[in-house]
Image (cartoon, rainbow, N blue to C red; front, side):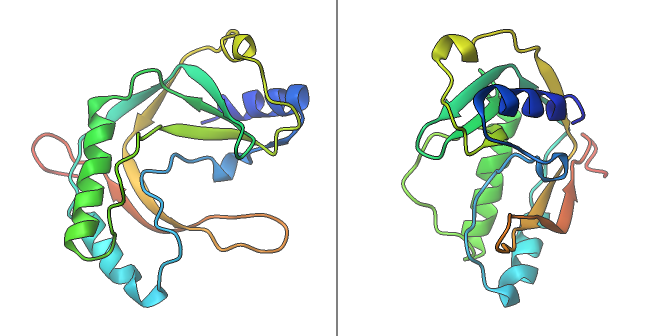
Length: 169
């Protein structure tokens, strides 16, 4: 989303840190960790069983996590369609023996804007003017994140489009 890149750069300059590159901006639905390469086709097949309709995610707040020094954009209220997508995806992977559900934690949808914050923002800074942005969700993807010594990058392994109400893509 084009509007997020200038915001990431602005906040990285103000707080110190590294702005997320636009091509790596994403919202994680499920983090799978290390996954055997020979299991990826099964993962893709399970994810293909998930059906969802297009929806919009309203990014209307900023947050920061001190434990990993991140600044993120998120939503004050998670749309039910996003909760359903995450639950359906997790269920499909559990049924396929590809994911072990851990103890339930709150799902906090977020897009990381700045990593390695030099200074954590105060609560009033986080409440400063942040223009709400609508992020249309029309697909989810399976990303692989091979690491090198300099940074992380993402490789798209598969895309899973939304389906309209008639069940057509």
